Length: 392
Image (tube, rainbow, N blue to C red):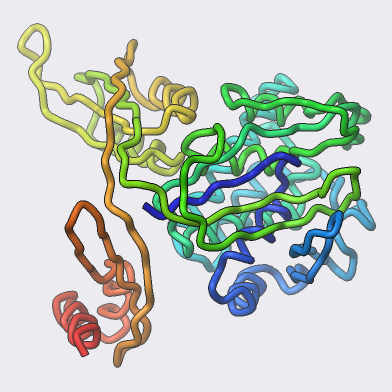
C-alpha cells in the first residue's frame, strides 16, 4: 500500500511539513498557485531551495503584508478568537474535505489551549497559531495530503527539543504546554538541542493525520521530501517525508460503540457529523432492541488508536450515552489513488482501488455532482461522460 512515513527526528512544524510534502507533489508550482488563490491577497506562500548541514531541501515562507513570518511579529501576536478563525476557514474556497480537516486541526488546538489556560473553548484567543501564516501552513498540509492520498501515514517518535521558548505569554518550557497536551499518548522525547522543535501547529497536524508512531516500517521508498526549518542547529533542521510501498498487511483500528434510545434522529446525525469532521474512519448506526422493549440504535465510531481520547470526548459530549465499549479490530484495505481525467465538461477525478488481486475505478461523486449542476444534466449523464472519456 502507498505509505507516507514522516521522520520527526528534528520535530515538526507547519512550514516543515508543507515543504516536505510539496517535494512529493507532482505539480508543486501549480499547487502553490491554487493555494495562494484560496488565501487573501495580503497572504503569499512561496517555496525556495534551501540547505541544512549540506542536505538539500525546500523552505516554505509565508509573507503577510510584506513581512515574512517571524520577521515582524506584530501581526502574529494579535489575539484571534476561535470564532474568527472558524469564519476564516469557512470562507476558504477549497474542497470540503480539506476544509473539514482544517477545522478539526484547529479544534484540537483550541481544546489544548482551553485545557492549558482553564477557559472555555469559546473564550479562547489564539496568538501565534491564530495568525494567517499558521492557517496557511495548516491549509497547505491538509490540501497536500488530500491530493497525495496516501493509504496510510506513519511517523517516528517526535523530538520536541529542550529549554525554554518565547511565546505571547512569556517564556514557557519546551515542549510548550499546548504542544504537550496535543502530543499526549504519542511517543516524544527531548535531547541536547536547545529550542522548540515541535510547534503546536505541527503537533496538531501529526495528531490528526498520523495513524501510528514508531520505527520506519519495511518499505520500498520511491521518493522523499525534505522540508527545512528557519533556524540552524548542530543537526540538520528539517523534516523528511518518505513515500513508498509497504506490504499489504492489515492494520488495527478501534470500534467505539454505544447504545442510544433517547436521542432524536437529528441529534444522532449531528453527533455522527462531528465524529467524521474530527477524522473518524467511519461512523454508522444499527437498529437494536434495548431493555424494557425500547427500540434504539447502536452508534459505532471507527478510528485509529491515537484518536481514541478525542472520539470518546466527542461521543460523551454529543450523545446521551453513559458508557462506551471499545473493540480492537484487524483492518485490511486496498491501495487508493486519484488521477484527473479531462472530459467535455471539465476535469473529473478518478479514484482507483487496487490490491489483493482486485482493481476497481470510479469517478469521484463530488466532481460528477458539480458537472451535473453546472451543465443541467443528470448525474447518470455526467458519469457516462466521465466513463466514456476514461475508456478512450
